[in-house]
Length: 98
Image 1: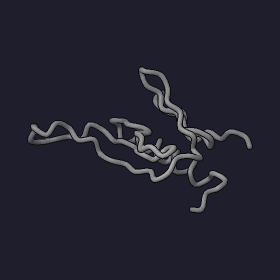
Image 2 (image 1 turned 180 degrees about the vertical axis):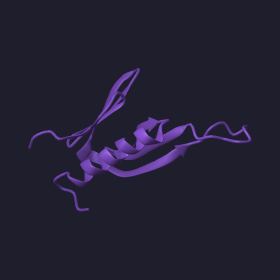
Image 3 (image 1 turned 90 degrees about the vertical axis):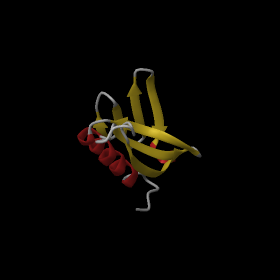
Image 4 (image 1 turned 135 degrees about the vertical axis):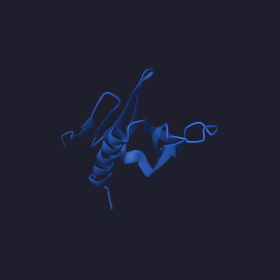
């Protein structure tokens, strides 16, 4: 099977085989076939502020039996593109039963 790229940007790459998170510390690679139970959450701003603003969004999942942070981003538009790419990749993996 040839590699299909669903998203490629400066902070992440999502293909049919892997999810790659890029950061200042390098890259972290997660196998798509081993990702389960994906959830999203809002990363709250400081609690002491009266008008709190979210600092960003976080994508979490189980990978090889460990709960991991797949991705975080402050911009909802970019975050949603990465989430959609991951969703497409998970839906199209061979053993998918969605």
